[in-house]
Length: 197
Length: 197
DNA sequence: TTGCAAACGGAGGCAAGCCTCCATATGGTG
DNA sequence: CACCATATGGAGGCTTGCCTCCGTTTGCAA
Image (tube, rainbow over all chains, first blue to last red; front, side, top):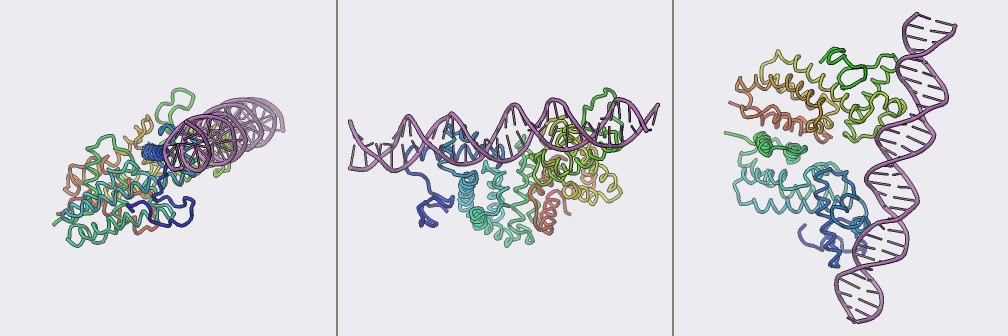
Protein backbone atom coordinates (compact mmCIF):
# COMPACT_ATOMS: atom_id res chain seq x y z
CA UNK A 1 0.00 0.00 0.00
CA UNK A 2 2.84 2.32 0.71
CA UNK A 3 5.76 1.19 -1.41
CA UNK A 4 6.09 1.50 -5.14
CA UNK A 5 6.53 -1.80 -6.94
CA UNK A 6 4.21 -4.29 -5.34
CA UNK A 7 1.22 -5.95 -6.99
CA UNK A 8 1.84 -7.68 -10.31
CA UNK A 9 5.05 -6.49 -11.93
CA UNK A 10 4.23 -9.06 -14.60
CA UNK A 11 3.00 -7.64 -17.92
CA UNK A 12 4.75 -4.58 -19.24
CA UNK A 13 1.67 -2.44 -19.88
CA UNK A 14 0.29 -0.43 -16.98
CA UNK A 15 -2.76 -2.34 -15.83
CA UNK A 16 -3.87 -1.46 -12.34
CA UNK A 17 -3.91 2.00 -10.89
CA UNK A 18 -1.73 1.26 -7.92
CA UNK A 19 1.67 2.92 -7.85
CA UNK A 20 3.51 3.03 -11.18
CA UNK A 21 4.71 6.60 -11.42
CA UNK A 22 6.29 7.53 -14.77
CA UNK A 23 10.08 7.76 -15.03
CA UNK A 24 11.16 10.88 -16.87
CA UNK A 25 11.42 14.01 -14.77
CA UNK A 26 8.97 16.14 -16.73
CA UNK A 27 6.53 13.28 -17.00
CA UNK A 28 6.68 12.69 -13.32
CA UNK A 29 6.09 16.37 -12.68
CA UNK A 30 3.08 16.47 -14.94
CA UNK A 31 1.76 13.32 -13.42
CA UNK A 32 1.74 14.93 -10.00
CA UNK A 33 0.25 18.15 -11.30
CA UNK A 34 -2.55 16.21 -12.91
CA UNK A 35 -3.21 14.23 -9.78
CA UNK A 36 -3.43 17.40 -7.72
CA UNK A 37 -5.65 19.14 -10.24
CA UNK A 38 -7.89 16.11 -10.41
CA UNK A 39 -8.16 15.91 -6.66
CA UNK A 40 -9.35 19.51 -6.57
CA UNK A 41 -11.69 19.13 -9.49
CA UNK A 42 -13.26 15.98 -8.12
CA UNK A 43 -13.69 17.63 -4.77
CA UNK A 44 -15.47 20.57 -6.32
CA UNK A 45 -17.47 18.99 -9.07
CA UNK A 46 -17.71 15.36 -8.05
CA UNK A 47 -16.77 12.44 -10.23
CA UNK A 48 -18.22 14.11 -13.29
CA UNK A 49 -15.64 16.88 -13.41
CA UNK A 50 -14.49 17.60 -16.95
CA UNK A 51 -11.19 16.13 -18.03
CA UNK A 52 -10.40 19.10 -20.22
CA UNK A 53 -10.84 21.28 -17.19
CA UNK A 54 -8.51 19.12 -15.16
CA UNK A 55 -5.84 19.33 -17.85
CA UNK A 56 -6.29 23.08 -17.95
CA UNK A 57 -5.96 23.39 -14.18
CA UNK A 58 -2.82 21.31 -14.29
CA UNK A 59 -1.44 23.47 -17.08
CA UNK A 60 -0.87 20.58 -19.45
CA UNK A 61 -2.42 19.57 -22.75
CA UNK A 62 -5.30 17.21 -22.92
CA UNK A 63 -3.10 14.74 -24.74
CA UNK A 64 -0.77 14.58 -21.78
CA UNK A 65 -3.62 13.83 -19.49
CA UNK A 66 -4.62 10.92 -21.68
CA UNK A 67 -1.09 9.64 -21.90
CA UNK A 68 -0.98 9.29 -18.13
CA UNK A 69 -4.56 8.29 -17.55
CA UNK A 70 -6.09 6.55 -20.54
CA UNK A 71 -9.60 6.69 -19.13
CA UNK A 72 -11.45 8.89 -16.71
CA UNK A 73 -11.65 5.91 -14.45
CA UNK A 74 -7.87 5.52 -14.35
CA UNK A 75 -7.54 9.07 -13.20
CA UNK A 76 -10.22 8.77 -10.63
CA UNK A 77 -8.80 5.55 -9.33
CA UNK A 78 -5.34 7.02 -8.96
CA UNK A 79 -6.65 9.91 -6.93
CA UNK A 80 -8.68 7.51 -4.90
CA UNK A 81 -5.71 5.28 -4.19
CA UNK A 82 -3.73 8.28 -3.02
CA UNK A 83 -6.47 9.26 -0.62
CA UNK A 84 -6.78 5.79 0.71
CA UNK A 85 -3.09 5.72 1.50
CA UNK A 86 -3.40 8.91 3.49
CA UNK A 87 -6.26 7.44 5.43
CA UNK A 88 -4.37 4.28 6.20
CA UNK A 89 -1.39 6.19 7.43
CA UNK A 90 -3.62 8.24 9.70
CA UNK A 91 -4.89 5.09 11.36
CA UNK A 92 -1.37 4.09 12.30
CA UNK A 93 -0.62 7.48 13.73
CA UNK A 94 -3.70 7.44 15.93
CA UNK A 95 -3.19 3.94 17.23
CA UNK A 96 -1.58 5.15 20.44
CA UNK A 97 -4.61 7.10 21.66
CA UNK A 98 -7.34 5.71 23.92
CA UNK A 99 -9.95 3.67 22.06
CA UNK A 100 -12.64 6.25 21.58
CA UNK A 101 -10.28 9.12 20.81
CA UNK A 102 -8.52 7.02 18.23
CA UNK A 103 -11.75 6.11 16.48
CA UNK A 104 -13.17 9.60 16.62
CA UNK A 105 -9.92 11.06 15.41
CA UNK A 106 -9.76 8.74 12.48
CA UNK A 107 -13.34 9.40 11.52
CA UNK A 108 -12.60 13.10 11.61
CA UNK A 109 -9.80 12.53 9.15
CA UNK A 110 -12.17 10.51 7.12
CA UNK A 111 -14.41 13.51 6.62
CA UNK A 112 -12.04 16.42 6.75
CA UNK A 113 -8.66 15.40 5.47
CA UNK A 114 -9.52 14.23 2.04
CA UNK A 115 -10.44 16.87 -0.44
CA UNK A 116 -11.97 14.11 -2.46
CA UNK A 117 -14.39 13.12 0.21
CA UNK A 118 -17.39 13.21 -2.02
CA UNK A 119 -15.72 11.13 -4.66
CA UNK A 120 -14.44 8.66 -2.12
CA UNK A 121 -17.86 8.35 -0.65
CA UNK A 122 -19.35 7.66 -4.03
CA UNK A 123 -16.61 5.16 -4.72
CA UNK A 124 -17.68 3.25 -1.68
CA UNK A 125 -20.45 1.89 -3.84
CA UNK A 126 -18.64 1.13 -7.04
CA UNK A 127 -17.60 -2.25 -8.29
CA UNK A 128 -14.03 -2.45 -9.41
CA UNK A 129 -10.96 -4.33 -8.27
CA UNK A 130 -9.32 -1.06 -7.32
CA UNK A 131 -12.20 0.09 -5.20
CA UNK A 132 -12.50 -3.32 -3.66
CA UNK A 133 -8.87 -3.18 -2.70
CA UNK A 134 -9.27 0.34 -1.42
CA UNK A 135 -12.26 -0.53 0.68
CA UNK A 136 -10.36 -3.45 2.04
CA UNK A 137 -7.42 -1.21 2.92
CA UNK A 138 -9.68 1.29 4.61
CA UNK A 139 -11.29 -1.53 6.51
CA UNK A 140 -7.96 -2.95 7.55
CA UNK A 141 -6.94 0.45 8.84
CA UNK A 142 -10.14 1.65 10.47
CA UNK A 143 -12.01 -1.43 11.56
CA UNK A 144 -9.59 -2.31 14.36
CA UNK A 145 -10.17 1.16 15.76
CA UNK A 146 -13.90 0.57 15.81
CA UNK A 147 -13.52 -2.89 17.29
CA UNK A 148 -11.27 -1.56 20.00
CA UNK A 149 -13.72 1.16 20.89
CA UNK A 150 -16.51 -1.40 20.95
CA UNK A 151 -14.53 -3.75 23.18
CA UNK A 152 -13.83 -0.87 25.51
CA UNK A 153 -17.54 -0.21 25.73
CA UNK A 154 -17.21 3.17 24.06
CA UNK A 155 -18.91 2.40 20.75
CA UNK A 156 -22.21 0.66 20.22
CA UNK A 157 -21.63 -3.01 19.50
CA UNK A 158 -24.38 -3.35 16.91
CA UNK A 159 -22.76 -0.98 14.44
CA UNK A 160 -20.79 -2.45 11.57
CA UNK A 161 -17.80 -0.62 10.21
CA UNK A 162 -19.66 0.09 7.02
CA UNK A 163 -22.57 1.54 8.98
CA UNK A 164 -20.24 3.92 10.70
CA UNK A 165 -18.58 5.07 7.50
CA UNK A 166 -21.91 5.72 5.88
CA UNK A 167 -23.16 7.75 8.77
CA UNK A 168 -20.04 9.82 9.08
CA UNK A 169 -19.41 10.01 5.36
CA UNK A 170 -22.91 11.20 4.66
CA UNK A 171 -22.33 14.26 6.76
CA UNK A 172 -19.86 15.68 4.29
CA UNK A 173 -21.81 15.00 1.19
CA UNK A 174 -22.75 18.59 0.76
CA UNK A 175 -20.38 21.40 1.41
CA UNK A 176 -20.65 23.37 4.62
CA UNK A 177 -20.42 27.11 4.41
CA UNK A 178 -19.80 27.29 8.13
CA UNK A 179 -17.08 25.09 9.61
CA UNK A 180 -18.67 25.38 13.03
CA UNK A 181 -21.75 23.71 11.67
CA UNK A 182 -19.73 20.85 10.27
CA UNK A 183 -18.30 20.44 13.73
CA UNK A 184 -21.73 20.36 15.37
CA UNK A 185 -23.12 17.85 12.90
CA UNK A 186 -20.05 15.69 13.16
CA UNK A 187 -20.36 15.70 16.91
CA UNK A 188 -23.91 14.49 16.64
CA UNK A 189 -22.88 11.73 14.30
CA UNK A 190 -20.13 10.61 16.62
CA UNK A 191 -22.54 10.72 19.53
CA UNK A 192 -24.78 8.39 17.61
CA UNK A 193 -21.96 5.91 17.45
CA UNK A 194 -20.79 6.37 21.00
CA UNK A 195 -22.09 4.80 24.17
CA UNK A 196 -22.21 7.06 27.18
CA UNK A 197 -22.30 5.74 30.72
CA UNK B 1 -49.15 25.27 0.18
CA UNK B 2 -51.84 22.77 -0.57
CA UNK B 3 -54.40 24.52 -2.75
CA UNK B 4 -53.99 25.54 -6.34
CA UNK B 5 -54.32 29.25 -6.97
CA UNK B 6 -52.46 31.01 -4.23
CA UNK B 7 -49.35 33.11 -4.67
CA UNK B 8 -49.51 35.86 -7.27
CA UNK B 9 -52.28 35.25 -9.75
CA UNK B 10 -51.20 38.56 -11.21
CA UNK B 11 -49.24 38.40 -14.44
CA UNK B 12 -50.36 35.98 -17.10
CA UNK B 13 -47.00 34.37 -17.79
CA UNK B 14 -45.90 31.51 -15.57
CA UNK B 15 -43.27 32.95 -13.29
CA UNK B 16 -42.67 30.91 -10.17
CA UNK B 17 -42.80 27.16 -9.95
CA UNK B 18 -45.43 26.95 -7.27
CA UNK B 19 -48.76 25.50 -8.35
CA UNK B 20 -49.87 26.60 -11.81
CA UNK B 21 -50.85 23.35 -13.47
CA UNK B 22 -51.78 23.70 -17.17
CA UNK B 23 -55.45 23.75 -18.12
CA UNK B 24 -56.18 21.51 -21.07
CA UNK B 25 -56.74 17.86 -20.19
CA UNK B 26 -53.97 16.43 -22.34
CA UNK B 27 -51.55 19.08 -21.21
CA UNK B 28 -52.34 18.40 -17.61
CA UNK B 29 -51.82 14.71 -18.19
CA UNK B 30 -48.45 15.23 -19.79
CA UNK B 31 -47.46 17.61 -17.08
CA UNK B 32 -48.03 14.95 -14.48
CA UNK B 33 -46.30 12.28 -16.53
CA UNK B 34 -43.28 14.53 -16.86
CA UNK B 35 -43.22 15.30 -13.18
CA UNK B 36 -43.31 11.63 -12.33
CA UNK B 37 -40.66 10.73 -14.87
CA UNK B 38 -38.47 13.53 -13.63
CA UNK B 39 -38.86 12.46 -10.04
CA UNK B 40 -37.67 8.98 -10.97
CA UNK B 41 -34.85 10.19 -13.15
CA UNK B 42 -33.59 12.61 -10.54
CA UNK B 43 -33.75 9.92 -7.91
CA UNK B 44 -31.69 7.58 -10.06
CA UNK B 45 -29.24 9.88 -11.75
CA UNK B 46 -29.25 12.95 -9.55
CA UNK B 47 -29.79 16.48 -10.76
CA UNK B 48 -27.76 15.83 -13.87
CA UNK B 49 -30.28 13.42 -15.37
CA UNK B 50 -30.77 14.04 -19.06
CA UNK B 51 -33.86 15.94 -20.11
CA UNK B 52 -34.19 13.92 -23.28
CA UNK B 53 -34.27 10.83 -21.15
CA UNK B 54 -36.96 12.27 -18.94
CA UNK B 55 -39.11 13.10 -21.94
CA UNK B 56 -38.60 9.59 -23.25
CA UNK B 57 -39.58 8.06 -19.92
CA UNK B 58 -42.69 10.18 -19.85
CA UNK B 59 -43.52 9.14 -23.39
CA UNK B 60 -43.69 12.70 -24.70
CA UNK B 61 -41.60 14.69 -27.14
CA UNK B 62 -38.76 16.84 -25.99
CA UNK B 63 -40.66 19.88 -27.22
CA UNK B 64 -43.48 19.12 -24.83
CA UNK B 65 -41.10 18.94 -21.96
CA UNK B 66 -39.77 22.37 -22.83
CA UNK B 67 -43.25 23.78 -23.18
CA UNK B 68 -44.01 22.85 -19.61
CA UNK B 69 -40.61 23.45 -18.13
CA UNK B 70 -38.61 26.01 -20.07
CA UNK B 71 -35.41 25.25 -18.20
CA UNK B 72 -33.99 22.30 -16.38
CA UNK B 73 -34.27 24.33 -13.26
CA UNK B 74 -38.01 24.83 -13.68
CA UNK B 75 -38.48 21.11 -13.89
CA UNK B 76 -36.30 20.42 -10.95
CA UNK B 77 -38.00 23.06 -8.89
CA UNK B 78 -41.43 21.68 -9.66
CA UNK B 79 -40.44 18.24 -8.50
CA UNK B 80 -38.88 19.76 -5.45
CA UNK B 81 -41.99 21.73 -4.58
CA UNK B 82 -44.05 18.58 -4.83
CA UNK B 83 -41.78 16.80 -2.41
CA UNK B 84 -41.87 19.67 0.00
CA UNK B 85 -45.63 19.55 0.07
CA UNK B 86 -45.57 15.88 0.97
CA UNK B 87 -43.16 16.58 3.76
CA UNK B 88 -45.26 19.37 5.16
CA UNK B 89 -48.34 17.23 5.16
CA UNK B 90 -46.46 14.52 7.02
CA UNK B 91 -45.62 16.94 9.80
CA UNK B 92 -49.28 17.69 10.37
CA UNK B 93 -50.15 14.03 10.52
CA UNK B 94 -47.51 13.30 13.12
CA UNK B 95 -48.35 16.24 15.33
CA UNK B 96 -50.43 14.12 17.69
CA UNK B 97 -47.60 11.83 18.76
CA UNK B 98 -45.34 12.37 21.76
CA UNK B 99 -42.49 14.81 21.10
CA UNK B 100 -39.68 12.44 20.30
CA UNK B 101 -41.79 10.01 18.30
CA UNK B 102 -43.15 12.87 16.24
CA UNK B 103 -39.70 14.19 15.43
CA UNK B 104 -38.21 10.78 14.72
CA UNK B 105 -41.17 9.86 12.57
CA UNK B 106 -40.90 12.99 10.55
CA UNK B 107 -37.19 12.57 10.05
CA UNK B 108 -37.83 9.05 8.85
CA UNK B 109 -40.18 10.43 6.24
CA UNK B 110 -37.56 12.94 5.39
CA UNK B 111 -35.14 10.23 4.35
CA UNK B 112 -37.40 7.54 3.05
CA UNK B 113 -40.40 9.16 1.46
CA UNK B 114 -38.83 11.41 -1.08
CA UNK B 115 -37.52 9.61 -4.10
CA UNK B 116 -35.77 12.81 -4.91
CA UNK B 117 -33.80 12.84 -1.73
CA UNK B 118 -30.43 13.11 -3.36
CA UNK B 119 -31.54 15.93 -5.58
CA UNK B 120 -33.26 17.65 -2.69
CA UNK B 121 -30.14 17.34 -0.66
CA UNK B 122 -28.06 18.92 -3.36
CA UNK B 123 -30.63 21.61 -3.73
CA UNK B 124 -30.44 22.38 -0.05
CA UNK B 125 -27.45 24.54 -0.85
CA UNK B 126 -28.67 26.34 -3.90
CA UNK B 127 -29.75 29.90 -3.99
CA UNK B 128 -33.13 30.46 -5.50
CA UNK B 129 -36.38 31.98 -4.35
CA UNK B 130 -38.07 28.64 -4.78
CA UNK B 131 -35.59 26.80 -2.63
CA UNK B 132 -35.72 29.55 -0.09
CA UNK B 133 -39.47 29.20 0.07
CA UNK B 134 -39.21 25.44 0.19
CA UNK B 135 -36.69 25.47 2.97
CA UNK B 136 -38.91 27.86 4.81
CA UNK B 137 -41.88 25.55 4.38
CA UNK B 138 -39.88 22.58 5.54
CA UNK B 139 -38.70 24.59 8.48
CA UNK B 140 -42.21 25.69 9.33
CA UNK B 141 -43.32 22.08 9.27
CA UNK B 142 -40.41 20.35 10.95
CA UNK B 143 -38.84 22.88 13.24
CA UNK B 144 -41.70 22.90 15.74
CA UNK B 145 -41.26 19.15 16.04
CA UNK B 146 -37.62 19.61 16.89
CA UNK B 147 -38.32 22.43 19.31
CA UNK B 148 -40.97 20.40 21.05
CA UNK B 149 -38.60 17.46 21.43
CA UNK B 150 -35.95 19.80 22.74
CA UNK B 151 -38.35 21.38 25.23
CA UNK B 152 -39.34 17.93 26.41
CA UNK B 153 -35.68 17.15 27.01
CA UNK B 154 -35.64 14.47 24.33
CA UNK B 155 -33.44 16.18 21.79
CA UNK B 156 -30.14 17.93 22.36
CA UNK B 157 -30.69 21.65 22.73
CA UNK B 158 -27.57 22.72 20.86
CA UNK B 159 -28.70 21.27 17.53
CA UNK B 160 -30.19 23.62 14.99
CA UNK B 161 -32.86 22.39 12.66
CA UNK B 162 -30.49 22.65 9.76
CA UNK B 163 -27.89 20.59 11.60
CA UNK B 164 -30.42 17.85 12.11
CA UNK B 165 -31.49 17.81 8.49
CA UNK B 166 -27.93 17.59 7.31
CA UNK B 167 -27.11 14.73 9.58
CA UNK B 168 -30.21 12.76 8.71
CA UNK B 169 -30.17 13.75 5.07
CA UNK B 170 -26.58 12.72 4.65
CA UNK B 171 -27.45 9.20 5.56
CA UNK B 172 -29.39 8.71 2.36
CA UNK B 173 -26.86 10.18 0.06
CA UNK B 174 -25.85 6.88 -1.30
CA UNK B 175 -28.24 4.08 -1.97
CA UNK B 176 -28.48 1.24 0.48
CA UNK B 177 -28.59 -2.26 -0.91
CA UNK B 178 -29.81 -3.58 2.41
CA UNK B 179 -32.81 -1.87 4.05
CA UNK B 180 -31.77 -3.25 7.42
CA UNK B 181 -28.56 -1.30 7.14
CA UNK B 182 -30.41 1.89 6.38
CA UNK B 183 -32.38 1.26 9.53
CA UNK B 184 -29.27 0.75 11.63
CA UNK B 185 -27.57 3.85 10.31
CA UNK B 186 -30.70 5.91 10.72
CA UNK B 187 -31.01 4.74 14.30
CA UNK B 188 -27.48 5.88 14.99
CA UNK B 189 -28.20 9.25 13.47
CA UNK B 190 -31.32 9.67 15.56
CA UNK B 191 -29.41 8.59 18.64
CA UNK B 192 -26.96 11.35 17.92
CA UNK B 193 -29.78 13.84 18.10
CA UNK B 194 -31.49 12.33 21.09
CA UNK B 195 -30.78 12.78 24.76
CA UNK B 196 -31.12 9.68 26.90
CA UNK B 197 -31.69 9.83 30.63
C1' DT C 1 27.03 17.32 -28.28
C1' DT C 2 24.27 14.62 -30.39
C1' DG C 3 20.54 11.19 -31.03
C1' DC C 4 16.45 9.33 -29.95
C1' DA C 5 12.98 7.32 -26.96
C1' DA C 6 9.85 9.44 -24.19
C1' DA C 7 6.76 12.98 -23.50
C1' DC C 8 4.10 16.93 -24.99
C1' DG C 9 0.07 19.69 -26.79
C1' DG C 10 -3.80 20.56 -29.23
C1' DA C 11 -6.51 20.15 -33.68
C1' DG C 12 -10.28 17.79 -34.98
C1' DG C 13 -13.72 13.92 -35.41
C1' DC C 14 -17.38 12.00 -32.74
C1' DA C 15 -21.21 11.55 -29.35
C1' DA C 16 -24.51 13.39 -26.19
C1' DG C 17 -27.27 16.91 -24.42
C1' DC C 18 -29.45 21.36 -24.69
C1' DC C 19 -32.89 24.12 -26.64
C1' DT C 20 -35.60 26.44 -30.62
C1' DC C 21 -38.80 26.36 -34.05
C1' DC C 22 -42.60 25.16 -36.63
C1' DA C 23 -45.69 22.12 -39.17
C1' DT C 24 -49.26 19.21 -37.40
C1' DA C 25 -52.83 17.50 -34.18
C1' DT C 26 -56.57 18.01 -30.81
C1' DG C 27 -59.59 19.34 -26.73
C1' DG C 28 -63.36 21.95 -25.68
C1' DT C 29 -66.55 25.78 -26.49
C1' DG C 30 -70.14 28.24 -28.95
C1' DC D 1 -69.86 20.31 -35.86
C1' DA D 2 -66.60 23.66 -36.72
C1' DC D 3 -63.15 26.51 -35.28
C1' DC D 4 -59.02 27.93 -33.10
C1' DA D 5 -56.31 28.51 -29.05
C1' DT D 6 -53.71 25.33 -26.98
C1' DA D 7 -50.67 21.60 -27.20
C1' DT D 8 -47.69 18.20 -29.48
C1' DG D 9 -43.30 15.98 -31.31
C1' DG D 10 -39.04 15.86 -33.25
C1' DA D 11 -35.63 17.64 -36.72
C1' DG D 12 -31.74 20.29 -36.51
C1' DG D 13 -28.38 23.85 -34.93
C1' DC D 14 -25.35 24.64 -31.16
C1' DT D 15 -22.33 23.67 -27.31
C1' DT D 16 -19.50 20.79 -24.54
C1' DG D 17 -16.92 17.10 -23.39
C1' DC D 18 -14.53 12.73 -24.86
C1' DC D 19 -10.72 10.72 -26.99
C1' DT D 20 -7.30 9.83 -31.00
C1' DC D 21 -3.63 11.02 -33.72
C1' DC D 22 0.43 12.98 -35.03
C1' DG D 23 3.93 16.62 -35.71
C1' DT D 24 6.95 18.94 -32.37
C1' DT D 25 9.70 19.27 -28.20
C1' DT D 26 12.69 17.64 -24.54
C1' DG D 27 15.19 14.96 -21.01
C1' DC D 28 19.04 12.30 -20.60
C1' DA D 29 22.60 8.73 -21.69
C1' DA D 30 26.49 7.95 -24.24
